Image 1 (cartoon, helix red, strand yellow):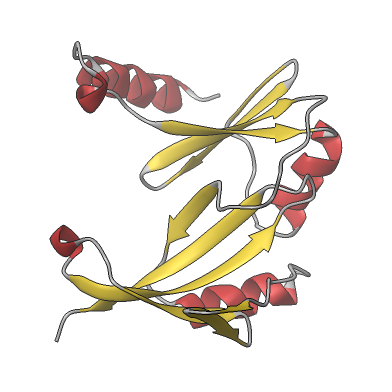
Image 2 (image 1 turned 135 degrees about the horizontal axis):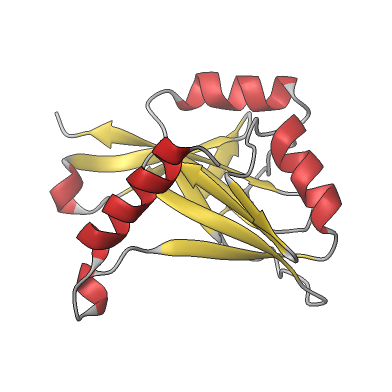
Length: 155
């Protein structure tokens, strides 16, 4: 880790402070039965490298948040989205991830249907300025379900 990394991290921790959960930073924890396999998947398929490692854990940093993989004997259910990324161009992201070997889920249930791996989801939180989102889902090497979404802006 570089000095700039530790300085930025310390500043972020000072800003995070607070005495309530609403003022706290949030991050995701995902189980991995095989941490080496998971690390290869995240590097080769998603283009992500951990910013920090420790025995039994890998921490990743994205633009506005972090997540960690932890060694676990437990298994992810893969039944629901455990972590999601908001992107500006879902078609480009899905195409790049497919090129790297990621397989996207195909869904066809009442109210939700993917076409070539991408669904249009009606409704969105009003504060986002969106009317819905385009979304895609995939599983990592450990069975964790990930989502990718692109906001459909209000007219």
